[in-house]
Length: 243
Image 1 (cartoon, one colour):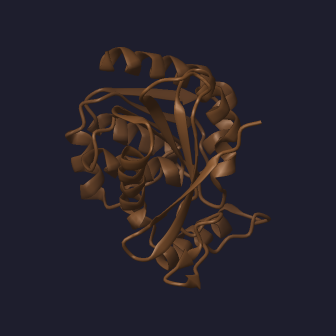
Image 2: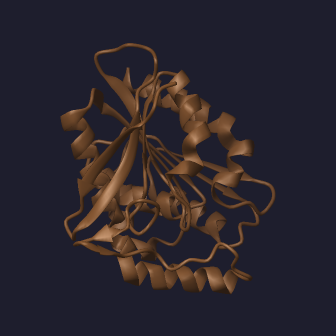
C-alpha cells in the first residue's frame, strides 16, 4: 500500500500549511497534476476517492488543507482554527461561522497559499508545469479562481463556487477575463447558498467556459456522484488542448 507524501509550506503571513502528494503508478519523467481545494469546515480528505480515481488515469494529485482547517492550523507558533460546529442547526449558523472564520484566518489569502503550493511542487516534485489543473469545492472553488492570474493553469473546475466578494470582486473579474484556458463551473439548480447564481456569473466572465447545472439542492462534493463523469470528460478535453 502506497502512502501519501506529507508536504509543508509556510504562507507569507505565517501559516504552516499541510498537503498530501501522490504519484500515479504509471512511470513518467513529468506528470500532469491536479490540486484539490476543499470546502469550508472540511479537510483534504473529502477528495480522497476522486483523487485515487484520477491517479489511475495518470495524474499526480495534491490534496491540501486550507488555512485554519485540518492540519493547517498553526500560524506564527499559535493555533488559529476556523470557527465551525459540524452539528450546526441552520444555514444562518453556517453563514455566521463562515464570516467569523474568514476574518479570523483571512480566506482572501488562500489563492496566494495555493500559488505557493504550485511553486513548491514545480521545484520539488516531478510535475509538468504546463499541465496543472485546479479543482475546488465551495470555498475551495472560489479560492482557485484568482490563482489563474498567478500561474499558468491549464484548467479549473469550480464546484458550488461562492461569492466573488470573498476573494475580491475586481480580482476575480480580472482573473477570469484574462484566462483563456478551459474552465468549468458546476452547481445544483437549488443550491442552498446561491452557487447556481455565482456559477452563471463566473461563466459570463470567462472566455472558455463550461457551465453544468444539475437538479436538486446539493452543495460541494456531494455533487460528485452526479457530475464526476462530466468532470472526467472535461479533463480529457483539457488534455487535447495541451497536446
